[in-house]
Length: 542
Image 1 (cartoon, helix red, strand yellow):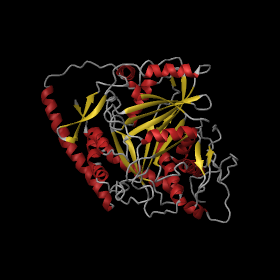
Image 2 (cartoon, one colour):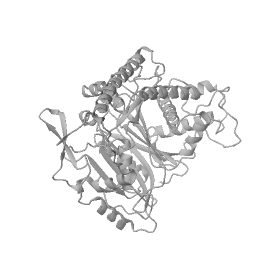
Image 3 (cartoon, rainbow, N blue to C red):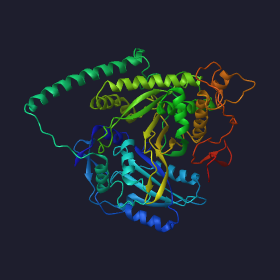
């Protein structure tokens, strides 16, 4: 047995029936040209179900020691059953994305069996348009977003001629991946007197660590009293909304892709990062969502924005993640002012983390997350929400990937919700697109699919701000009122300096629900109280 470290154990301790602590992903593929689909899937299943050694902890299950559930260990599964972990599913007719999302929603709602290794992989056939999908889920104690990207890269190839002979969780596949990615070790000659230098260096690092952590905690605490500038922190002025409730065990999953070029163009025009614009898109969408529900909280929504603390050479850690509290400025009507407030908040959070080493930042995050763990265990997280939601941006591969000749068309993450916030927005940058996966509690947010439409409207609003799209003329209402209360796209104020005239004469309908320029995964968009209606973007099929 080997002990589960503190960061990983937190996800195990917080888990209960209503709050499964696994992360997953839906990968969408096109079949290779001219292939027999049934034969192809059988070959893929044969490669996934090989009897081989699995890398830690994917061949291990969780057990307890003498201290009970307070001390957890990984133990090798001597009765490993690959057929339990790798499953084959088929969609009912007509095989639309709606049916696919319903299946993923159901699979993502169920707990992983702790008497077995904590992962499952589902090969899904029956999709229209010559496509199939793979849904996978792993416990967050076993992997984080960056680790999941490494596993994906170990499984897929940039060549359509390559063939995978091992599972992504296998020891052999991951060792081959590490050999390709990491440079060979360099033999070093230790100088004389190294022992003394090591002791002195350890003493210096200990002093620096103490000093840096004390300074970080001083800034963290000062934010509650308005003494830390633009730094946002958990629990401070976090409003209670319909998102911040106790959650049920059922989930709703929706997904959509947006062209990376659209976001990049807005970044260039507004001098912002991709993450800034993504947060501004989510802020605009959430503002519209709350306005549609008649909720107008006095304080801005706050989002946990996870960031990787993983060193580039670290491919083995299960979790190496911290977070920044992002002020989403949802109480600000003007889109430019909202974006600048988000930028200031993120800059303050990054400055705080940069003042610490990777080891110090990890320790700081573990300590500051203890209250969240306690409120969750005590069942009072909804009464004292640390954040309004989670918005996570995971960098993915920029090149086209293939799996046994099948082209990977989309990578849609499915993450965690728990008591205190009922929705999670995670996205992966893949190739020339940003793939959004949104998971919500079905009971708390039954119409979560509308967030997809609001994201499109918020991105269009930012394009208008940047002068990349002509804002439609409005009549009968002032622009300020339209930005404050309408769920339609808000336009920028007349005197905004960053707004420029554009030569493009694009005719954009204000009420259009088409995802302009987005490469879509269509989604089921039900009317308020009638039969469901499928809505997608211009490229949507199904």
